[in-house]
Length: 268
Ligand SMILES: [Zn+2]
Image (cartoon, rainbow, N blue to C red):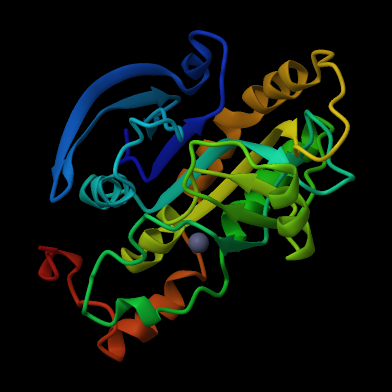
């Protein structure tokens, strides 16, 4: 098995043993970070491709997002993909729709905004907001099972709390299409650690100010389709070496905004 290059963060409610589609667990590890121990992180292997898997969600025991990304870097991961359940703010989004966001709005209030406090990393460019190569691979594979994900703006909040109708209207006026609790600030830390970060989102609820249709199994149906292609997504993410998102980080390193070696700037 080649060294695993992908960390997969399932943050959707899946049937038991769903992750078996990524292969058997060959190892479980815990990673000590400056923000506590992260894990157990499962290493799964299928057809010679290894992937780290860490269940992830926005409930009160959420892992420290700094620790998660630090652990990913420690394990030698190059790409992080989260599969998250989100609230559909946009009026065209229904339960069971898939979204691959193109941009984000950070409306978190209590979470840190940089790993490297007082080191200037806070000025790191956020363009592109998410890894375009990762999203391209995700979209290609979803198309094979007839799923055409929407694009849009992801709005991240601390949670765990559902939005009020007034908040939903406000977020929509801001241009947000979906609301979630697990992507920000992780995507920012990923950039600081020169990791690719991608988001695959499933709409499981519609916003509080919209009509609430009765569930008809549409979420379960799309989850199954995504699980069908998930191993192929992970395989392609593991085997596609080139990615452009490291270029802005390399430029930032040249300007001293990022350290030459990520371990140099150990946070206090
Ligand atoms: Zn990338």
